[in-house]
Image (tube, rainbow, N blue to C red; front, side, top):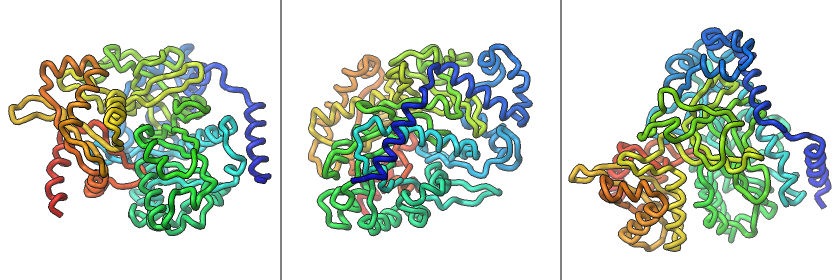
Length: 511
């Protein structure tokens, strides 16, 4: 019997029983905003925008919105964060020891997001909050004694101008609390291996000596890792060596397209949870059974605002209006897409992260990621969000009895200079004609989205599909130095990126 595990599980239950839930989301968020302003009032940003005076205002939220502009990465970096790499007290007290590099899925130069000690604490606090919800799930007591495999990017960080930089998962892996060291796998030595394939091979070699109870990571890379472990160790499934594996924490991309193939690697059912973790913060997590919706972390150092992703906030091409409607947590509605603004203890102020979210349950502050503000295909009025694209692909898979894990679409022009949608579809060992796939996908999109249906009758002249293997997709990412535990294939590509992929394929096919 797992006596220690039962004690830990019981302690979590007791703590949750004694702890009161945040009763008023609005009050909790106003408190976070005040704490942020108080902390940064003597920084260059705080002095410039009058934080000391804002703190004296009766309506602090109204004053904050009037004084501080909405910014994207380039606006805040060019004016503030670029200087913060050289000087202290720019947008947050002191000087960040770390800068998180974006995963670069847009094909541009990596962004550098400041990561302060207070931001690292926020990451840890949200993680602990999620761990404290595990007593609500039907999990074995043994789980609480087992090891956790976190498939992150390399924790071997680069030194640059007096700070360290790398992907956020690598930064977090290099800052795990000492008490977690006995549970953490693959361990610091393997986590520091830069080369993805070498790191996975080392994991596969060491895997039989571990007793893994939970795994965390992006589904595509976790699946590749598990397949390698199974192959290298001649296993039927991963439970042959990890019988206590009971929990998988997904993140980064929608999990549903991977569920069926992931379960083929298992010997028994496990519990799936989702997380919303980005370079800029850990924003939400699954907190109760029966759903993959995520609870917004409203009491962990981050202040949120919400811009309706419709004509109240954006024009028909997806660009932010000059004076968009901005809402607080108390004003949002369920089933409406919102662009997310954040203010954080890393010196992000009214920063538009680029994600759109949708609340599914306001009583529990549960939401899902519905897409990206820039990953919104609307060159000819088709108005395809990432959520609609995911839904259509899932419907195609069900209708044709296939599995599609990786895919991307871009707006391009045909030889007659007319607009079309170019798709890349990753299929492994599945015989399906491109024409049948094209017709089925086109019909599903027409059924799901009336704007797409209208566009197909007018300016959108057709769709083209190029079927490739998933390995080709991963090899292309690697050729562009985008292979690793936190890299994601963008579902909606820029035209230039799609053309680069298509141009790369012939040389790959000849090799």
